[in-house]
Image (cartoon, rainbow, N blue to C red; front, side):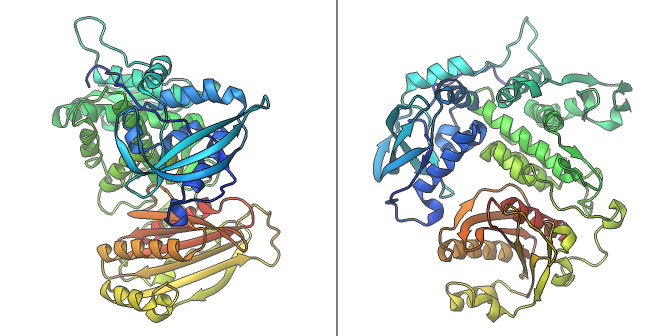
Length: 548
């Protein structure tokens, strides 16, 4: 890695908490409503979740504004003023030039608002939102270059430089930078963060987790909070791929340390809060490595090709073909590991949370892990009904209300254009459907914040490419036909996954679409109050795992 180079960075007016939307003037779907985005940003500000707020920044700003600069300003200059909930007064579409880079955005949502503070003052402001390539409104941080430079100088820690004639090793540089990054990420709870020890080894070593030799490879021991790095593995990765391949290994193991500090742990049969299957645990650490990599890239301390080096190594570290996702040492396939890293790099910490159902544990099987190996019959010929979840895999208090197996015409009749959908499903080789509806059990006493209904529908198409096309088509149909539906970014649930949320007569509804090969999974969950999306994601993940 090169020495740190602090770039001249970005900013537009900092987004403020926004509600009470009067009228969006952009002719787009509800999921693309700039005022709705402002409401979401408001919730993050009110909660003090500045990491998630940073994750919603526009890619052009994301590429040049370090996370620490944004979080530092919000924590030290904005939050102490006690901001209240802002009121939107106007939304206009304008052409706007970002003063920091000079780039012009022809279609910019200019949202005007009034911002109250704890001392009784009210200030007027404007936040500008621009659509990214995925069609989501993103905000900008900063008003001019000088302001940005000031925040960088104040809040962004420089990576260590070599002391003496011998350059610092990749491990030393990476470890110091990872420590600074995660210390900043824990700024809201500084007492929870402590740096791990980092110990390279090339012979039998006695650790808090027992004796380890070269066959172990790199690993993290939570009992002594130490990252153990097997030197031959690191040297081999650095020689064959590049120095940042070794940095990725350090970042992955540091991710396990962060998981330990946050209460996550790997378990063969997870049952408790924070328990994860090994594959979830490992992909989460890959995702954390991607988050740090993006931040390091933003601060100019990476060389050209470093990100690609991490991806190349991830593509070589996947599990052997046929490894069960329930294997107690499963790390994920080559593609899953690379995708998890890239998801963290592109979408930030919040993507890593979604990848494991957020702070909620995924539905857990009750059988011993040894009994959870894939069936000898391939998933291509297994009946869809066998893949439907049971009540044990659902939120508590629900029971099976109805099982359905619909014809193609019955399925396509629910789409906005049944004729076109019938044509497409035929072309995509649609082969069948099985669905199951869950409702509250007769003796259930569910809280208002509990999930009260779940609908699971499975489809099989001719091949993976056709299934991917059907997923995209189905999501667009739902966003068009369901009033108020807006898409929500989710992490790596399966080969691909997308989700949306909308108000519902029964409260709030969240729908997740997931693809695994030729299988398309749809899960809709509803709650009277609160967000049912974590439950929808967890059920979808359970089906995907069963289909694997």
